[in-house]
Length: 240
Length: 396
Image (cartoon, rainbow over all chains, first blue to last red; front, side):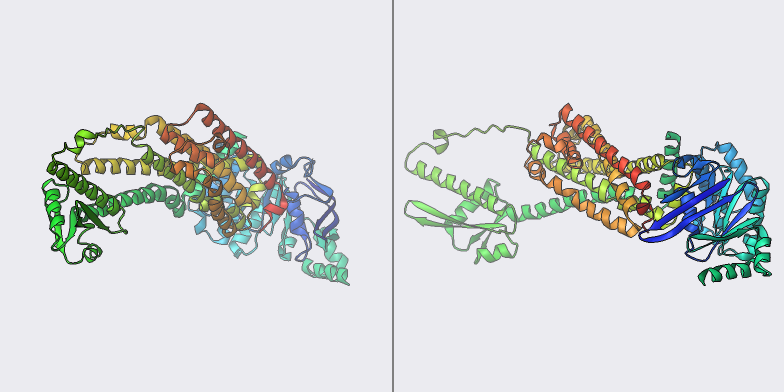
C-alpha cells in the first residue's frame, strides 16, 4: 500500500507539489495522470527515495520515505521512463545484479527471472543489452525492478515508445502483478491504457490533485465517452 | 553489507573491462608504452654515444702543425685516439662531423700553447679534448724534464683515488624518481576514463536512478565502486611495474652485452632487490586506494562523462604540484624529509624513491599507509553523503 499525505516539494522558488494526498491499495492498479510538468515524476522520485519531500510524507507498506528509506526501497520496485539498463551487461546480468543487491538468493532469482522471461517472451537476455531495441530493454527493465518480488510496484510511462506487441505484453504483465495482489501505481500519458488497466485514477495538475475516482465514475461525472475527454475537461476547467 | 559491496565490485569490473578502451588504458598502455620509451631511450643513447665515440676517436689538427702531428702520432700509438686528420680548418671539420675535437700547438720559448676545439652541441666533446690536452701537457713536461736532466714528474707527485658511496646511487635516484612519477601518472591520469565512467557515466546513461532506488544502501554502492576502481588502478600499476621490470632487465642485459660481460640475474638483484619490489607494490596499493577515492568523488560530482574526464585530467596535473617539492631532492639523490610521507601522492613517490634508494624506515611506511587510508576513508564518507545529495545525483 502507498499512502501519500499532503506532499510538498519545491525546486528553487517554484512549488512543484502543493500538498498532494493519495492512496494506492493492494490488488489494484492506481493511475496517476497529468499533463507534462504536473508533478508526476517528482512524486515518483520522492516515492523511490531519490528526492526528499519539503512537506508531508509518503509511506510504502507503512514505512516512511523520510524515516525508513531503506525499508521503503525493499518494499518497492520502480520502473523509470528511461530504462537505465547497463549496455555492456547482458539482460540476465542486469537482472541478476539487482537481485544480488536486494539479497535474493541466486537460485531463487534465476527461477523468477526465467518465469518472467516466459511471461514477457524474452528470448534474447544472453546477448549484451547494447544490442537491444527500446521494447526489449523495457521488458528487462520491468523484470529487473520486480526481481526481488516487492509488494509495491511503481511504473513511470512503462510502455512509452514501445511497439504494439511489446505494449500488449507489458500490459498483460501488469494485470498479472495486480492479480498477485501487488500495489501498482501507474503513471502514464496513454488514456486508453488507463481505461484498460486502472481501477482508480488521480489527476494531478499544477502540483495538486484535481480529480480522483474510478475511470467509469469520472467519465460519468464529466459526461464523456472516454477518460481522455474527461481528462481534457478536468485540466481545461482547472486552467479556467 | 560486504556481500552487496562485492556484487557492485563484480558488476563494475565486468562492465568496465567489456569496454576495449579500458583494456587499452589499464593494461596495454602502462605495460607496453612506458617500457618501450625506456628501451627506446636506451637505444637512442647507445647509438648516439657510439656515433660520438667514433667521432671522438678522430682528432683534427692543422695542416703543417708539426708539433700537433708529433703528439697526435704518440696519442695514436698509445691508442688514446684512433686516428687524426690534417685539415685546413679545424672548426669546419668539427662542424661537418669529421671529428668531435681538434687541437693546435704553438711553441712560445720554453713553453707551448695548446689551443683546443670541440663541438658544444655534443655533450662529451669538452671533457674529451680537455683530457687530450692534459695528456699532451704531461708528455711535454716529461720531455722537458728529461731534456734538463730532472726526474720524471710522476716520481715527484702521485695521485691515489678512493671512490666513496654507491656507484649506482645516481642511477638508482633517477630510477626511483621516474618509477614514482610513472606510478602516480598511471594510477591517477591513466585511469581517467574509468574514473569518469563509474560515476558520471552512470548519470549520463540513466542507470544511476534505478541503482539508487534499489534496496542496496548508499554505503555499499559507494564502497563497491571505490573497490572496483582501486582494483583497476592496481591492475594498471602492476602492468606498469611488470613492464618497467622487463625494461630494466632488458636494459641491464644489453648493457652487459655491450660491456662484453656475462649477464646474470643477480645484476638486477643488486639494483632492485625483491624487498624493494614488494615495497613498490605496496606503494602502488597505497596510491590505488587514494586515487580511486579521488576519482570517484570527482566523477560523482560531475554532470556528464565529458565534464568528469575534464576534471580528472586536470587533477592529473594538480597532483604533481605537491610532488614538485620533493623532485629536486630525488634528482640529486638526497634523503627525503619525514613530511613527504604524510601527504598522499607525494608519499607514494617518496616510498618508491626510498625503496629504490634503500632509505626507508618502518615509520615512513606506517605514516604513508596511515595517511592514505585516513584520507581515502574521509573521501569515501563524502561520496556516501554525495549519493544522498539530490542536487548532485540529479545534476545532469
